[in-house]
Length: 495
Image 1 (cartoon, helix red, strand yellow):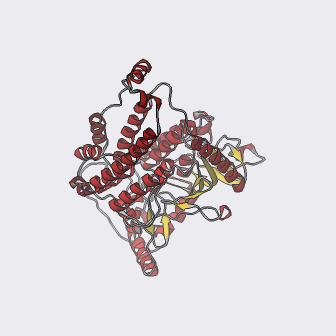
Image 2 (cartoon, one colour):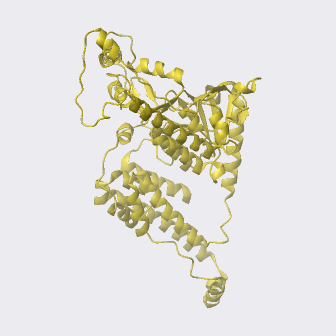
Image 3 (cartoon, one colour):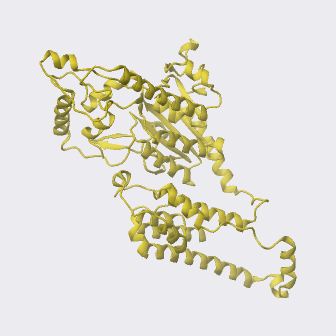
């Protein structure tokens, strides 16, 4: 969790992907705006002290609110910042977007990291047939988490062979629009606000005010450009050019990623908006996000939800029917590839560095084609005893016993992973291994290349959180909960 002092330090002088009119409001909320006598730092600490005094008794929020528009009714299930309703994973994105999500008092500030976690859960959850995000945000900060979130959405949306992902924009400016542009479809009401495809950073020169008060600040620095952009002195030509180059680079990244997500747009069309803000639609094309190609359709929020709910129903019905086995790959090869992918996905979710994941990929056995060809299979059938070839009740019973044996083996593997010494060193990796159905040998291979476990800020935020993960048993936590969830899952499949 971040407090205002940490956040103010992180945002000070940093490029923002935010509608310009929203920047002063955010600064006032964090207590870093002007208006008080003295330096900005003095003003900030005064406001921070008052904020702490006023919220001292308030309960600090440790994870994002999982909410949905009131008209959808009670959710069927709740995840990390998202809810499930009628097969649709619903994620509401409100307020300014930060690099890391955190709670301050009873308020939650969304982070690209926690939104990424929410999307990973919805993508992996078999109950979710489609994803619907409802956006009301002025934008956010420049951070690597934003393009990573957009890439995750593009890779797993319907256009990429995954689940339909739709965005309904109430207000989606700058960074919020960047994230939304990776959806399959963007819908907005006529009165909604979209756009602001640009970046901004501001510089305040307090040197004149200090001179008026007889204050002289003398910096001693190593490196000629160390104080470029400082509020203690006028902005030099070098510093001005550097800040402009920085903002131009952020803008180029922004435009490039929007074009990756929206095939209907061209670079010329996006640049022509000049970071302008638009209604969802207007009788004046110069004010219309629809006319500019920033959204796909104009509809009410209820209509947009009805559309994505129908897509979810169709996809879940299709999944229930079961896809036909691939004609190009034997079933055994497909299963092997799926297990290999599950191991690598679990390692990535557990936070292993890319070089360790690469080493793990090389260490895992590759899927091999089935050895038996159709002719070999016919020969095997000819060699079978007569009573076995004819098939009987004993065979059905044996098959059932085999399935039960597989379930018992899976439960034993989960328990063995939980009890292993490697699990104590890498609890997050062990938890992911149990949930993905790895064997003890596969888990040990993952742990062998893993770096020493460390607690990330996201782990601290999520520690002890009372939430329902996909496929997790309610009321259970940690490795023991994961083992129990695995046992219940196997029993359910057997039944």
